[in-house]
Image (cartoon, rainbow, N blue to C red; front, side, top):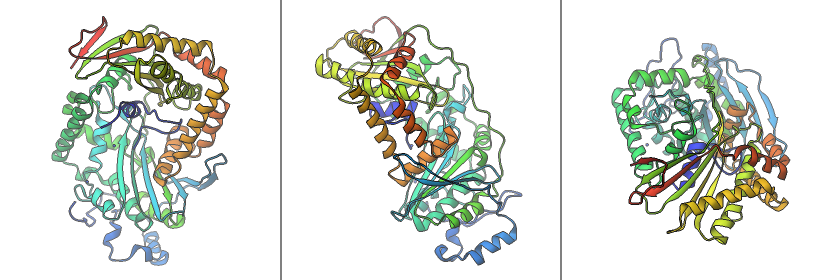
Length: 513
């Protein structure tokens, strides 16, 4: 069961540290290569060639491919190293079709991670067609031209690997971690569904996965306590039609309206090499990895240039109060404000503010509400930075029998106090240590490191942006946090109270389920 804190992570990309995005959402036979799309070289299954791939010579195997003229040459690779507390070396280059490639070798364990980011999420959907990005994530595991139905999971798991994918408003990712000698298999699997998904897509698969996603919505949103709070807040915080005014899961109505033509068009527009980034991290031979990447991804055609959403957002000038009647035992209080976008000026200050106010048992709100006043059992929240703009949110679980109005007054008093009194040096150091350790932890495993490199490239155009993030955290001052609170935690906000259905709601806009 997903905790309330993790639900907010899923919807707005909030996590300890500035870098982490919304976190990363199973076959019968191995199909041999079928005829490729016209004009595109067939992607062959590396395990069906009748040879031990670890012994495939660069003379016989690679020269044959070069002779056929199907290995496009990549752009000049750029090798860089980070210099801060997170020390990694990585190599970045692009294939002629626009695919960005990031390689980072770590021989400490015989495993390798393959991570693909497509720069598309629910923010790229149109009103009335919500849920497409997440639905498509499911479709990517249903088999492609050279991979049997549901075989993707089996081919990774039987190799001793793990895999999954996830969708948030700004991106969709897919990843595998496998023993190093299965790297070629993982690359081939990702390339085949990038280039040859549509020939294997059927109405039956679409209907099946539409049903799966609808059940997921019912389980994780409609039938989960407080599950409809995120979309209630989103619809109030953003104007109708804004890409952040709906949640990633979409609506049942829109999912029902998804037609095969819509899904195929979504793939052709967004699932293209020039809208993707491939990261390979772990124990591997970089020269061999480059040959495999060129072989399997190099001939995939580029797609159209992607137009990014650039909606105009009018800041809220007044408070919006909502009440949601829900099948819950205890009421809950939510407060949400607009805040700076990911990596924008003020993002680091708001992240620090979130830790000072609600980051654990030493935060101001936890001390005040849980320890001192003893009117709440939990407080959490903070800065959720996204590409178009951020969302700063606080959530309080009151004690049974405590009036929500009293809880809200206490929260407002603490917000007023931080506007009047900047955080102490000790508070700021604790917040800084927490954010820095969160960044460092994201680079400890090859899976997380690959995801972090792709995130930095996709959103900052710099795979090594962790150095800049560390510098920005270090540069935050008490006055900067205070100014951020004054600037962003103003009267323009959404206040949502979720109450048990048997209770009488306070005067406000009301929603019931």
